[in-house]
Image (tube, rainbow, N blue to C red; front, side, top):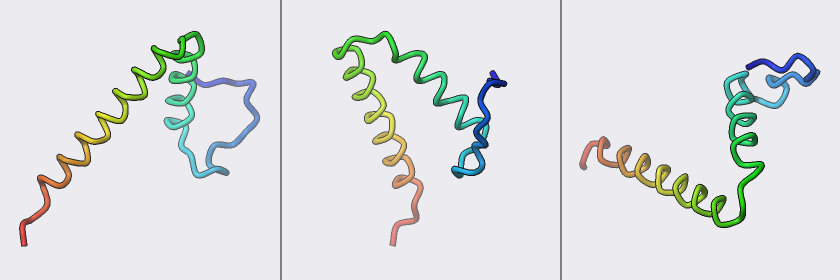
Amino acid sequence: MAHKNNPLNPAMYGLTQQDVERVIRIHTMCKDMDEDAFEQMETAAQSIKLVASLKKLDNRPVA
């Protein structure tokens, strides 16, 4: 999903091409959402981040 008309170099901003493509997909997905749908997606994303952080804690050795 490379955009040839984009002259910016993602590496200049510490981003990979995968990061850029992810942002483009998220923007495309969100651009027509109403506020309620966007808030639901934001809540789901926060829940996913919470679960991921809890899994990392679960894998830490116990002192």
